[in-house]
Image (cartoon, rainbow, N blue to C red; front, side):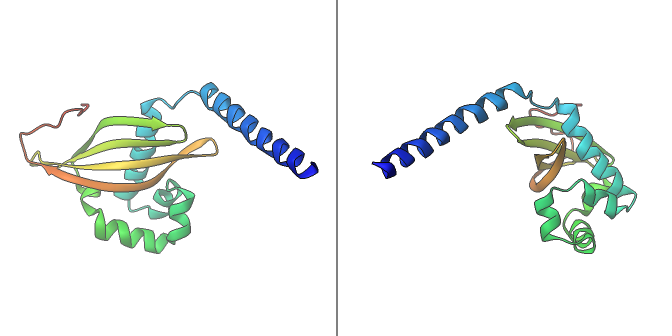
Length: 150
């Protein structure tokens, strides 16, 4: 009887926690897209200035656990060099789901071709951090992708 009562108590506690968590999430408004864009722009500005320590501070804690600053710099230079050479950037769609967000970012070269990336961001404390970047296919000069914001 005591075991059943304890089991019922903990089950009730878990159900109550689910409802409280859902209520709190509904109370916190999602970030405005410009807040997410600003995080991406700040990190890109740090990359262009070769300030990898500053760029690293915009990375999520999970990224910082996997890479030291020198490893982070080497990865960016090796895999994402075109980000620092883009003539301009443009933002596409934004999707926010609780404490996670995805932002589509286009890096436009001088020739007009664009390279798209999906930025994953995560809320950590009271700020958004970049949790990962995934490349998408290139866009030839003169072509536009739906959702591109100029």
